[in-house]
Length: 74
Image (cartoon, rainbow, N blue to C red; front, side, top):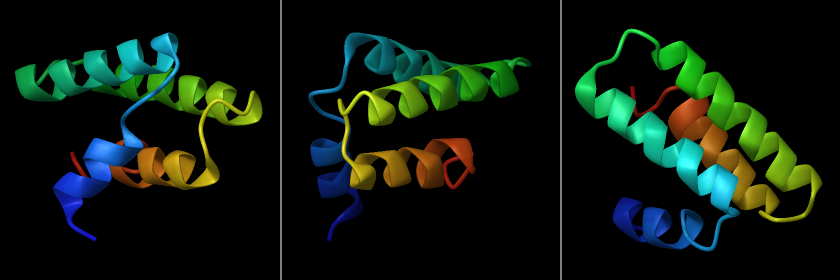
């Protein structure tokens, strides 16, 4: 599967809080902020909450962990 296609599918229809944390992390990466670890921790908490609440799938959860929390992107 194409990487851009994955993003288009897996980063859509997220709970608002997860969407906002993802946006802040992407902006932080782009701007090379010094508090990137805090943004990653915020995203991790949101991903965990969304998964436990059933708002995202296991595939989405794994995707966010691989790409953003474990740092494939960074």
